Amino acid sequence: MKQSDEAPLLGGFQDTPLAQEISENTNRMSRVRSAIIEKPSATRIFTVANQKGGVGKTTTAVNLAVALAEKGMNVLVIDLDPQGNASTALGIEHRIEVKSIYDGLVGNVPLQDLVNQSPESTNLLCIPATLKLASAEMELYSLMGREYRLKNALEAYLKTATDKPDYVFIDCPPSLGQLTINAFTAATEVIIPIQCEYYALEGLTQLKVTIDMIRSFSNPNLALSTILLTMYDSRTKLNMAVVEDVRTHFPTQTLETVIPRQIGVAEAPSYGQTVITYDRSSNGAISYMEAAIEIARKGIMHG
Image (cartoon, rainbow, N blue to C red):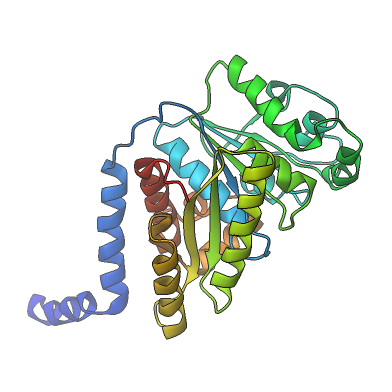
């Protein structure tokens, strides 16, 4: 083929939506790579919560953790969901006989004896969850100061840790039981991932009531600092309307970054990976990296 014949073909490709997306993603990745974030002056402890399942809660916890770890932050993920999906995504063994967060909550085992190095990043540690954790809901009821078990264990860990975490992410089960109350009591900030769907704002309002209850009951320092819109499809008017609605009601807490609905984001956990490791150049992976940078730069905004 002559050179003169090639040019129109290349020009035509550059005008396609796929070519434009590749070009835009390349520019976004370049900005992510060059972005500099500072370590926070004190450990920021996030509970990643939503009482509704399937909104990208665990996906959000592990991908933000990996993104911040890759930026040089020391990060600890505490898997507080008996299903152990965060442990799986971070490559951490969580068979039932493995020592886990259950042993910290119910057995008073120090957290430093439970942390595992994640293969995802040298700066990333994870305390796994096993199926034993399912019985912790019942067992915690009989213990003194049951809602403070995780808070006390985490405070003790932060005092003695050699490399103190800059960020802690606690991944909760999708229900309001003793485990979630422990997570809310131990945290200083809440991240709520919200799927872009019709009832999003209703669920968010319910969660806000729960957070206010925890603030008055066991943790006055808790703030709803971050709302992250997930599974966003720019082609639907409903999704765009939900984004606008949430930003109107929660302008300071809602991140500019939205996480797109994308196959790689859904597939990655089944390979025991985060989407950042599984498909780094994808729209979803870049969006999580952008969200992590935004959270780091934003600091605490009280809700």
